Image 1 (cartoon, rainbow, N blue to C red):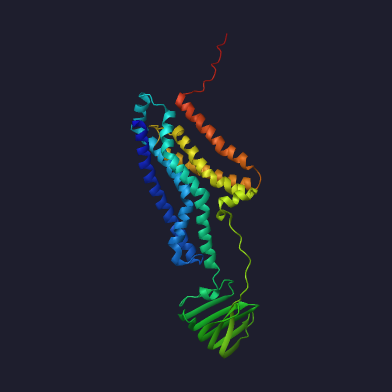
Image 2 (spheres, helix red, strand yellow):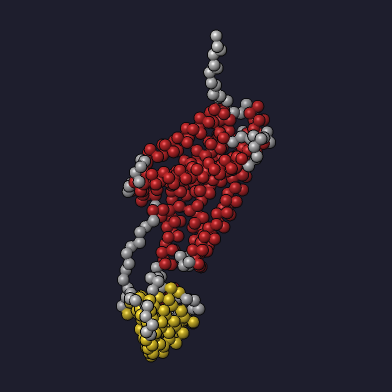
Amino acid sequence: MLFHSTIRKELARSFGATLIVLVTVVMTMTLIRTLGQASRGSFNPSDVMLVMGYNVLAFLPNIMTMGLFVATVSTLTRMYRDSEMVIWFNSGVGLGQVLRPILRFAWPVLLAVAGLALFVLPWSNQQVEDMKSSYESRGDLERVQPGQFQESGGGSKVFFIEKSLMAQQTASNVFIATTEAGKETVTTSRSGRVVTEGEDRFLLLENGQRLESQIGQTSLRVMAFESYRILAEQGVLGAKPEVPLNTVSTLTLLADPTPVHLGEIAFRSGFALAALNLLIIALAATRVNPRVGRSWNLVFSLLAFQVYLNLLSLGQNWVASQQLSFVGFMLGLHGGVAVLAVLLLLKRHHNWHLRLPKPKAAA
């Protein structure tokens, strides 16, 4: 049918252009944020592009849901503005019949949103967390870079080396400042090398001196040495870090349906349902008023999307804190929005009007 193919082609062009713009904006914002995190030592600077890619994957359910909604609103707005909708209406096409080609175009996007939210989102978050924890769990010696002052993981030591031979684990012109147990020490040496004994790693310094002082006192002790050994890393396994909820796979959440897990499931599954409801809202609410600017429909779509997304986040917290049940939240939010959107669509399709009873004339 000509009408269906016209709608789908217009939606495809608008959705592709909108998706490119949104992905570009999100990539730019993510790159800036990732560079800031890398400068603070959260990520390896060489992994910035990889981390950015994983973060963009995690944002794809949001991006595709918003892109589909904006594309539908912009397409219908253009058709109303150019009087195409008026022509189709006069040829016997009702507003309810417009929903059919929109859904035929949107169903692959809806499936992609569901798959991304349920499976790709936790996987990409897990990859980012693994890279972050791997980089932050480096030993103090791995953190040291020639020509840079580097703080240890616990913040009690500051290292500086002028040159380094990584293969031989040796360095020249070593500087170490330590603050612990109420003492401040500054150790310098011409050379140093890493020595491993059992599960511990020591830094063996040669030909240097050590300055030691008590915090708050003016006394200073100076010692010269030919060889001095400092414990750099102790082979003690730390506690297992807590696994963030957004990195847990959906199948794992379903296997253990606690309130917290159900809240996360409600959040992830809500993207596809929200995308479907937003399509009906776009069809029912989009119209062109000559007295209102053309950008009104776009402003409406952005506002509606943001409100819906915030309700998803609030619902996740409500389900996790047992203020609402999982079924109650899903029916209340998505079911309620779907009913309101369908009623609004039927009102416009059948041109229903609310007529108040006329007041009786006085006798």
